[in-house]
Image 1: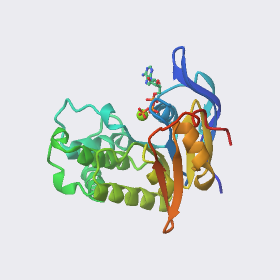
Image 2: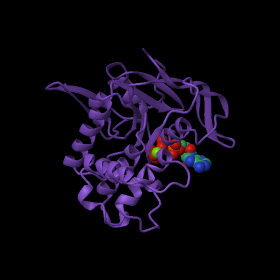
Image 3: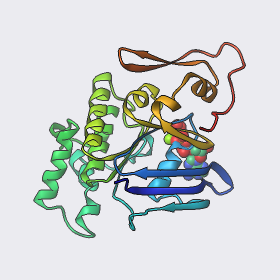
Length: 261
Ligand SMILES: Nc1ncnc2c1ncn2[C@@H]1O[C@H](COP(=O)(O)OP(=O)(O)OP(=O)(O)O)[C@@H](O)[C@H]1O
Ligand SMILES: [Mg+2]
């Protein structure tokens, strides 16, 4: 059964008088894996904030048809993470557990075990006593993923989850996300890495003032991506994998908006 977890109806998002995205219609169904792409400043993080319920619609409605807000796990873009406090990796992971523990309760042995299990899933259990701020960028991203998983989310919102990761860590992270999705997790992943979206997310949304949404094969094509990025972009199929390649801008003529689908 298609169970809609979040629905946007004619939503406009922005900050004060500044409209970032408008006419958004979106149904996020349990089990979806949605990849979101778009240029810097297009509103990807803004859309995630609205999904989370942290940003109200300026117009239209954001509905949770199940009657209550689903449980979200949020992996924020790295620059949004406060590193001023010297929390340990384990403490940061446990913070993701607080909404499951209830107000004012201290973590039990089973909460700690679960946090440790989440750290194991992202390959960071051996670092659990280190301070978050002493970790490398890619290691921090993994801890933030563990923190999101510690809340046993129904929907995982990932804002550039592989920023700062080397190739092996990036592959491990994508493998983890794919595995979570196969086990039923609803995933929304924002990334600038078109190759990741092209090969992992079955549904893709392009953000550019509005949202153009559909199956990956229909949405990620040469014309649409060239228009979006204002330069020639090619989508190739090699050995069963999609490869998205861009070229430096040589002449005008491919600028403009992505067309609605
Ligand atoms: N708190 C805020 N107050 C005012 N304007 C904001 C705020 N946050 C974002 N904006 C503006 O909204 C627009 C969209 O920002 P957003 O962070 O959603 O873009 P993005 O697609 O996530 O970009 P990037 O790829 O750089 O992460 C930008 O013009 C940004 O300056
Ligand atoms: Mg962003």
